[in-house]
Image (cartoon, rainbow, N blue to C red):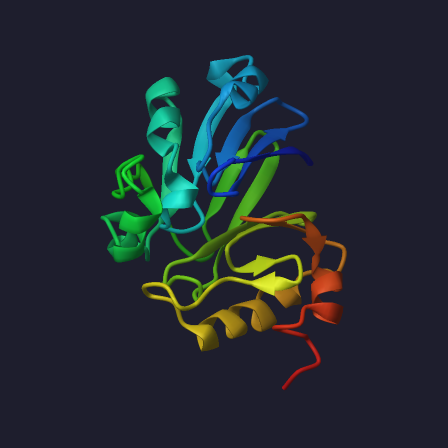
Length: 213
């Protein structure tokens, strides 16, 4: 079981949208639908293979293009965090992030996700991990090889906890007790910036190191 992962970064908000494909079956999903362009469209050669639209948390930059995916792929399931009610329905910070260029209210989800849920994409099982901190309902999606961390963990950084529903203590706990429990060679696919690994962040992330008390 393995995924082919391709990253597309929005020009304005610098948000990473990931298109993932199950190598064995060609079944596809998008993680954090903040961006949709012709480059993504050309990768989805068979619309019937596109099955899921997955959201890590309720900030506008991560769901800005969700409605476009929903409109173009009506059979795909839009899955969002169960704990993000405040933000998904037009949170304070989403209004300034949108800057009049899109709705600050997220489209209605077909499926609400919580800790322990799984998404099956072909022969690949994607696990759902609740990681509150950047927002109260933040999720990460992970396999045994990689984790899509949204705005929880970055390459040498962590998510901003000064926004609505953020909590620094919760974020630190999520990273140290959940993400850092994964194998060191698991690749981290963050919502912004470049990829890293769990091991690299445990050793050198200046905000949350695994040897800190």
